[in-house]
Length: 457
Image (cartoon, rainbow, N blue to C red; front, top):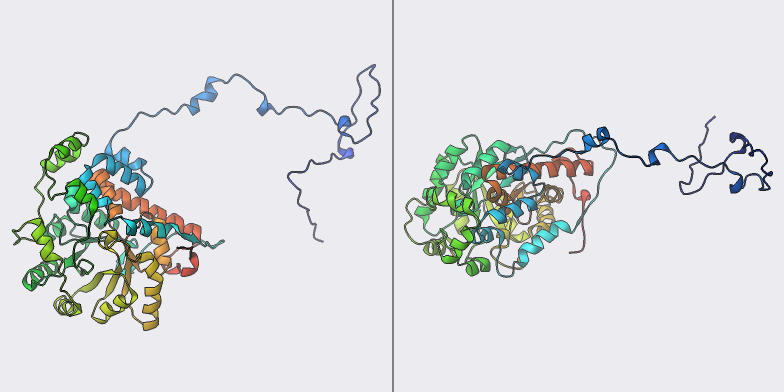
């Protein structure tokens, strides 16, 4: 026979059971109580629990509470206190002159695209599953035929040693240690060969701006292949340079010029200037034969005449994996795959080119649906707006095979060099593992669109 226990209302005052309360004896000479049995007046007074009685605290009680730590001002302690990428950004802003920081932090024109890209990740609702075994979380995945310990890689960024003197060396070595890909930019301040030497066991990719000067492009392609890069990432959203107004207002130059404003700014960031002035001057390290000005270089690199036929030439020339970065429509995603791309990066250049451009995270489900319908097995990667591991998990759930971070890792770099990049990746990894566990998912492959609901855009 099953005994059913009825739940109690925790807000109700329980009625005392008369059989459980001994009869109280009235004091001698006191009149008998006229209160009816079972009334509040007839109930015995309740003794105050010992824990609620006030007392003078003993030293032995206070000693365990007085955990005064010696203040720590080291780089390691500073980075350890950062629990989010946003907190690394705060540190980076304090330690980096305004012009280099704004070059990283800013976007084109009114920066509407960047704000929308970040808001897109906030405008979701996770849909967790319960009672799943999530005692072990596996964040590993495969991308372009090889394993990656995490579903995120480092995106190509230009002028990286301007942000912090360790630059591309810190990024590539941190990626190597984390077991993820690192992408060197054509506009990088470390050469293809030097990055390969700095991270010999890392998975290094090379990003190319496809020029009409075939000889210059071919030289870079051959050097990348010789240095062991297995993937070439061609950027196609730079027909002309975007209007990056923060750089215009800051009088941004490469390298930064020592004007009265920058000298004043330097007085608040002596460590950055000390590192900058005591290391090798900034150069476009991969462009060994280039001798023109920065403006001339950019004008020659951002070529408005390029077409899909140029992509065909690149596919014939490069024998490794080919990825096209800067895809912003479903139709273009399909077309570049038809022209030989092994993967696409849904990207609007971090909002640094066309303002009010499509948001990669919004585009993602449509591209995944189109590739599935067409039986295309090309990889879908995504960047722009990622600032947490939860953002990465959301992108994977909606159909991305992989993600890339640019600003997020540069904030870590500016906050603390190589150690700061390591800290960025640690934060993202912890975020991803926690988010997946709370979703009831233990493997990347088990994430589905059912785990994420897009709220109103």
